[in-house]
Image (cartoon, rainbow, N blue to C red; front, side, top):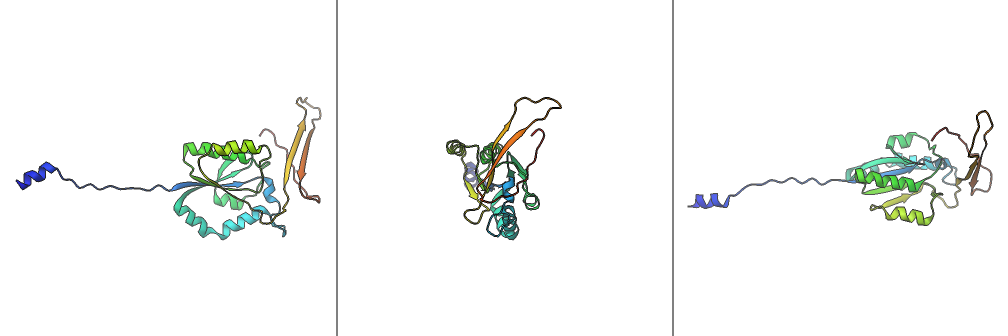
Length: 200
């Protein structure tokens, strides 16, 4: 009778495995040329301050990777996948600081593979966006963005392209002029390299 009751209750041993997925963290680094400007009164470059921090805090970054899947990106006009090694070994060459575009691209990336949080390392501001436009972009994301600056002192100067003027029509073998207004909030003169690219 006991055996029959045991069979009727149909006992079973069930073993379940649970896997806790780590959250995804995006570390986004400004790759615009202004990161080559001084970040303090000792004339140390902003990018060098950042590289020194990354080199001297490898344990901190290792600990982050224990808790998060970390993906590195760089941005100027657009967001590009990168790596910690690439960020440490390369020099910023971008022509603009398009933070709004970078965040929008990161939000699109999130829809393909989740981004749960982001760390944005930049020295500048997005000159093409109004505060209302920037606020609209931020309202469309559902993950926190923590911002870090490599500028470690107040009153450090910046440079930006204020305006570009050119004719809408060009003729073969005729001179074509482009007028670029570059501004800085630094009082004395500073050399700024200017590059002309074909296409993008």
